[in-house]
Length: 402
Image (cartoon, rainbow, N blue to C red; front, side, top):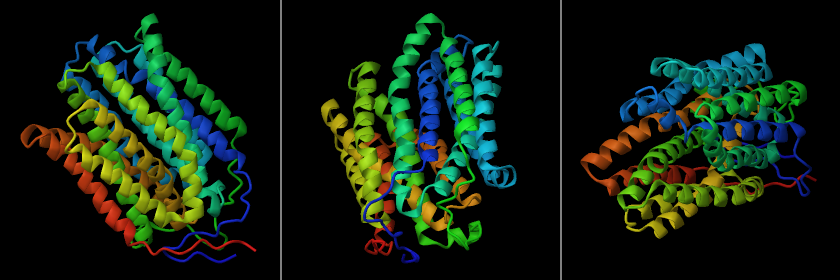
């Protein structure tokens, strides 16, 4: 086997074996988490309004989740290293479960804020620990596929969640929150019973935990973090905050927004596993270039779009690029940290959270003061920068094992 140097890709086997069982367990757990989020997110604004919350207060409730994720992120690596990733993962799931159950019985808007913030802490504990575990158990030449399977669970949960949440809300507005808590308790039980973290196929022998200053000097890590920042900005700022406003401004109701998001989610779900295979077989740099290039082209074209049909087409095109960007940066980070725990995974995750927190605010201000095309241009510019940075990665042809 040939050792991968900086900017290179790990060896690729001629006939790749199946992924470790732990990868599929993490995918199922991630699917439960995203299914639950999908249950409550459409109901959250309506539920908050029953406590007298206006649009600004609803926005604060949504933003608080991302802010607490961002605030707790720096501590996740240390907690995982000290107590073990599985324990931290289970604690994160249980915190989210308690948060959701408490929200179902909240008596005021202030209590909603506190309980929602608790959920953000649990969410980041889960996501960082799960990703660290994934990179530890997945062999180096399967990290792309492993990342794709992990993200596929989130995508499937995200597709099914909103529709189920709407049905549960017909029973009671608190019902989706209780259902989410039950799902999370089940996911925690599954993790405790089935997930074993002793297996570390992805951890390269002879490699210690890579410290953050060393990671930041590695171009692969910086490019992966830049792509994560751009993804958070586009997904939460442009897609989540701006696209619904644009569709409504075209005199369509919010159901049209749902159909557009569903179409793009289906495209991404169909492409995510093939994208993971491409990352492993073609290499990280080609996948990064393709993913950022397609995503940048789609968002750039949105600057000029003026109709719903074209918007849906471009959202689906962006989803195709995003499928690669869900797998390739994760694989890059796994290569750099050598599949070991540490602060590297937490900082990478925080880059997405920074985009999710800052993106909606900046996009909203730009759209209001300059115009919607300029707001779309902000996301396009970030993706173009990520595209150019991806070109700087040294490309090496995959080496086959003998």
